[in-house]
Structures are given as structure tokens and as C-alpha cells.
Length: 204
Length: 86
Image (cartoon, rainbow over all chains, first blue to last red):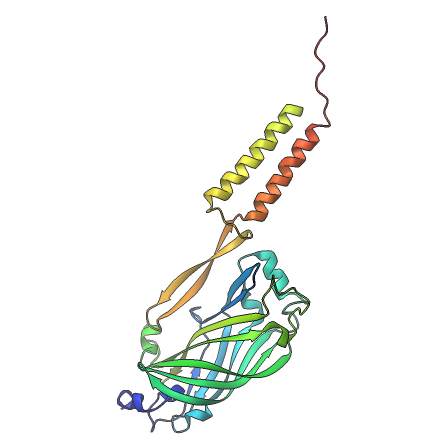
């Protein structure tokens, strides 16, 4: 039933129209979920990843535009390959990871959702919180639902669905007070973020 | 002593350059870990796995060059042995 109705329901609402709301949990013990970040300045390109991702998204197929939830990234999980750069990045002038333990995106709603090439896409509206600064942003996202694939991921221990969410967006370092004194020719003001995460909704 | 320090200086520089070159001549900063990209077949997500590995960078070469120069400089403190006269 679910599978046949998928294409006509949208965005995060690629779930059957008559199905109950589903909550996808993005806690990932396998370490697959990650965010990539790149700061491409004229003199230096900095890139890294973060994998301390958790959170949930609740999707009501009858009202996909009302999708809500929060995706959280543990600040200390941000990693760059140079140890000194990592120490600076997590330090007080930059992310101040001791005081700001989490980076969050609180999803408020969806808009412009549509299906294309078997994937649902939508603009996700929400509040991005970084270093104590909250800012409302809208980011494009695609979602692929994998019905029944949770069993494959857990070697048959759990039954349920998986949802894979992908998004790419750009933030401004200056908007969040991340070392505004740092010269932009060495550390770009623009932070390109790419998020690829899979959430699971076990059968109840 | 003078000669010994100069030989050590050259060995240090050559060893550092050789290590840097053999490790892939990384033109960025020194890394203590590298990312290996893997693929999750179920979700089709390519994801990074961090592996601990020391990869010397240009700062490592610069440090070795400075240490090498330092050794060569210290060697100047030692006097040349006077040739025996008569």
C-alpha cells in the first residue's frame, strides 16, 4: 500500500497519504550520518566533517508541510585534519565548543515540495542555531524513503523504514559571530554545508 | 664536533624531506588523521571515516629546515682545529 502511493505524496511526505505520522530518528551508531563543511577563501581552503548527528523528524503524510523536528550536531564532533586548526576551530574565538555544545536546525515547516526523479524535494524552513545565535533560514532538501530497509541495516533485528535526507546550503560566518576579525582572504565568510543523513522509523 | 654537527644537519634535512616526499608530498599543513571515504550500500550515502595517520606537511619541512639551520649555526661556535705547526 505504502509503496504504491509514494509517488503521489510529496517531500518528506513520500509516505502513504493514509498512513499515520512517522517519526524518523537520526541517531546513527554506524557513523554514516555526517555534515561536510567547506570554507573556500582565496588564500586557503578549509574543509572538514562532523558526525555527531542526532535528532528526529516527524512527518504527517496528510500534512507534509507541517513536518517538524530538530537535527542536532555535537559541536565537538566537527573535525579537520590539522590538529592545531581543529583546536582553534573549537576554541573560544571560533565555535567556543565548551559553551556551545550543539549546533541545531529546528524544522518549522516545508514549502515547495515536489517529486522528481523518484525523490521528493522541498524547501525546509527552520531556525538554525550556532554559537548562541538563532537565525531563520530556508534550505533545499531531498528525501528518499526506503520502505522496509531498516531490517537490512540492523541485520533483521528491527523492522521499519529508512529516510535519507540530503541538503546543501551556505551560511555566513559573520552572521553567527564566528571570529568576525579573521581576514576573509584566509578564512572565507561563506561556509558551504552539505548534510547527508539517514533516519529510521521502527515499526510499532 | 664542527663536522659532526654539519653532517647531522644535512642528515636531518634529507630525512625530513625524504619522509615528506614518501608520505605524498603534502603541500598543506601536517595532519595527524586522514579521512577515508566509504559507501553505505543501503542508504547510498558516501561517508567519511577518520583514520589516525601522520602525514607531514609544509610546516614539518619548514621545522626540519629550521632545526637543520640551527645545527649548522651551532657548528660555527666550535673552532676549527688548528693545523699542527712544525
